[in-house]
Length: 80
Image 1 (cartoon, one colour):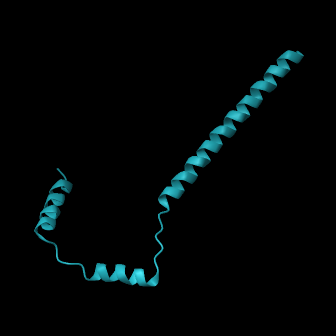
Image 2 (cartoon, helix red, strand yellow; image 1 turned 90 degrees about the vertical axis):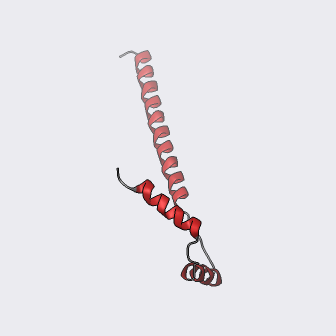
Image 3 (cartoon, one colour; image 1 turned 30 degrees about the vertical axis):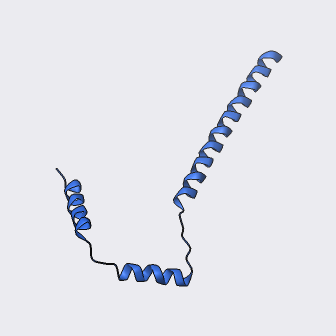
């Protein structure tokens, strides 16, 4: 091989390596972003935790509109 051909070959190899690195970096960035988006942790104080638990345990009975919404949801989710 001539010097020129070797230079071209090395240049192509370097470009291929750079392309692979960019692809790997992009993939890692996407994975990191997805992990961050999915990690929705809510930290509450003990008092706030008690308030949330109390609200869930003493929830009011569903009103007429809520009952209609449940019926409508059931119709939407029924298999055809």
